[in-house]
Image (cartoon, rainbow, N blue to C red):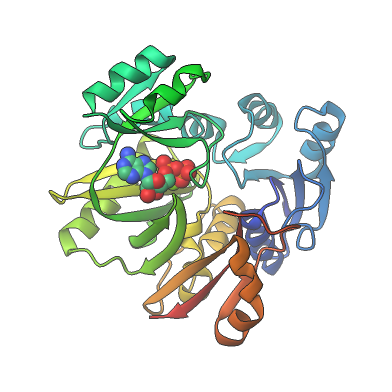
Length: 345
Ligand SMILES: Nc1ncnc2c1ncn2[C@@H]1O[C@H](COP(=O)(O)OP(=O)(O)O)[C@@H](O)[C@H]1O
Ligand SMILES: [Mg+2]
C-alpha cells in the first residue's frame, strides 16, 4: 500500500499537511532548507540541507511514494528530477508558472475571459520609467521570483522613482495599482476524477500581508459564481491535480481581476480546518492517495486572523479565547506569520 508522502518545505503549511496525513496513517518526510521549521515535530522523518545536495535529494526521492510542495519557491530542475521517478502534486509545469509572476500573468491573460491588472515587464531602469508613465506614475514593482508576503515589492511613484536607478532590475514586473473594492480568493482541489472549490472568502491585507480572512465573502451571487467559475477554468487550463489558490481583486466596476496563483494549500483556506467538514489539507491528502476530492461542506460563518510578528506575545490570551494555532517558529520577526486563530462570526 502506498502510504508515504514527501513534502518540499517545512513551514506552517507543511505542518498542517503532516497533521492531515497522520490522521490517515500516511508517513511524511520533509525536506527542509532550515534547521528549525514548523513541521519538525509533526512529520515522521526529515532531511535538512540544500535542495542541490544530490545525495540528500536522492535519499528524499527514495523515501516516499508521492510528493508535494508547501511553497512554490523550489528550483524547477529539482521538481523535474523528482518527477522523473515519482509523481508530484501539482506537476512541475504548474509550479513553474506560479513561481514566476511574468509567466503567470502571460498564462492568465491567455485564457479567454481571464484578466490580471495591467503590467509591464521590467528589465532595467528605463523600462521601469516608461512603464510608470503608462500607469499615471503610480505602480507596484514586484520581483518576478521568490517573493511572498509582500517581500520584493515596492510602491513606485514619480517621487521615489529615482531611488531605483541604481538597483538591479533585471527580473521584475510593474503592475498598475488596482483600486479594488475587495480582495477574495477561491481554493480549488482537483483529482483526476473530480474537482471541488472552497467558497470565495474575503481577504484583508495590511502592509501586503494577509491579516484576516472572512468566510463567506460578502459579495453578490453573480460575483460568487463568476469567481468560482474563473478558478475552475484556470485549474482546468492547467490540468491541475493538486490544490490551487486563486487570489482575486474585485475592482470598482465589479470586475474580477486575478492577482496571483498559489499551487498549494493557502493561508486564506486555514478556516477550513475548523469550519469545514473537509479541510484543504485533508483534500490534498485525499487527492494524492485516493484520487478523489470531497465537497468542503462549510459549517459556520467565521473569521481567521493571522498573528504576525510581536503580536505573538499575546499568545496566552489568544489561547484562552480562541482556537489558536501556533506555528512554532524559532524566532519572532517583524512581518513573520507566527500563528493564526479562528472564531465564529
Ligand atoms: N496591482 C495591485 N494593486 C493594488 N494592490 C496590490 C496590487 N498588487 C498587490 N497588491 C496588494 O499587495 C498584496 C500582496 O501582493 P501579491 O502580489 O499577492 O504578493 P504576495 O506574493 O506577497 O502575496 C495583495 O494581496 C494586495 O493587497
Ligand atoms: Mg498574494
